[in-house]
Length: 392
Image (cartoon, rainbow, N blue to C red; front, side, top):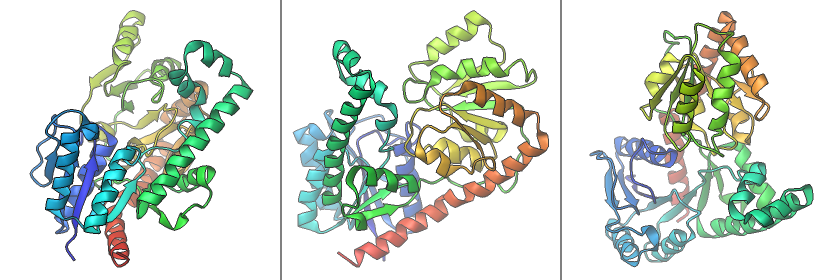
């Protein structure tokens, strides 16, 4: 059966600009190569990459899904395309879900919503989240155990209502890791559990063997606070550099914290730190021996599986449930107590000085990454389509 598959995003369709975009790009190409018809609808009018293999329809004016002209174009595009599968990558934009339900009544397609973030991002980072929402005087009142508990309960009730609405809107709700089931149960119990489906994010492939490596510690990602905790990167390197005088620290990425980091390196004369800006990642993974992640929270951190696919050992803050699921502690990476720089620095130094252990872990990374190749993950999607379209 040939499927007509429509992806919906709000961002520009540019796989280099974010995880949702990259995931959409990889799946779209996989489905096209498998002989299916694929379109992507973006609610952003510009800044799209030109990829001939994927058919793109984008909004004509600014204002995203809130603009009436874009809403009308969206409706027309769906009716013209007549999809039998619609994958909404942005379920938290509730208006999009409402529009899709109206179109589903007319066309009868199968509707999938995709979780692309950890449900515990607020629960695990309540201070940062509340500080961004509350005026400073009120925030100070909440910065105590009772205030945090009250704020947490308010968030839980609000988020639970959203998640129940998702279960009512979508025929299946696709998550990417076992811990997401635990997160959902925390918020909504077993509400419509038959709709919960697990399909992980994917990587293009894995290397057949460990490549020649350099003595490089790599950070690859957005340079920001509070999510990525990029403020920890240079303090971490300062704890490492003297013990590893022949190693370098490569920082690949851009973001609001980059300028401050570059200034700090120059002013403090921090040695062997190299900034590369935002670049395609895989050549850096292939050269690096280890990758560090300091994030406070992540949804499905592609960096972990991408690094494993190129035999770069992840050393990761264990600050969100998916981290432990993606790597096997002590085998294909290390989990660090959240924000404990001494422990992270100690593990990096230990591994750097243990050549046999490092090589063993690099091979284990390749073995683990095979579970997330696009061929495996894409087949899971096609099996889901085959199953659910029998129900429509």
